[in-house]
Length: 233
Image (cartoon, rainbow, N blue to C red):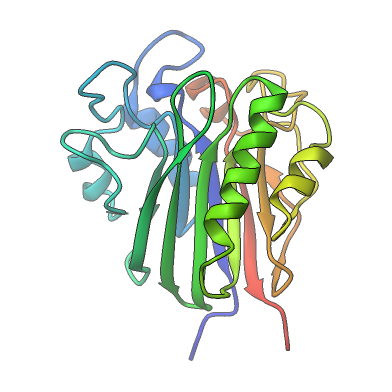
């Protein structure tokens, strides 16, 4: 019998450096565990300088029962800092690394998954700091998805947009961004930087931010999560 929903989390780890300026991967993983997610979309999961080693060590992740989607090269966990962790029972059917336009190197990850609710495409992003480039990056994502087979799709990540992001919603086109919740800065969140969007064949509970400690100190972002299910035909 298939499960009726899956929980998805998105979390900008800030390379596991907290507001106390301590690098503490164990604490970051504790926050992620508290979300109860079975699919975790991560940003800033790798350190900045080449060879971009993982900020959250592979062995620590696997010891907690997570599978690592194969986006990383060498010591990296992800692609341009974007990574995807999965609980047992979630299968990676296809994956792709996407390059995005911008003044600074940016990328996205795309995975087609076998999940308890059926096939699901997940896109992980960390968009740029400049509004014009964010729009161009969303347009590039739309072009990347357009030729693919139709599939229930979720996008998640740090959109770096302080407002309602209607311009990004319009550029994406193939899905609808969900109402955001304040997730940044973690100690006193005011901006809905961390967002998710879904295609219309999916249904989601309201996005919410996990604010219990140590989430308010483990990163400059709070993780956001929701429960996702298929919409009845």
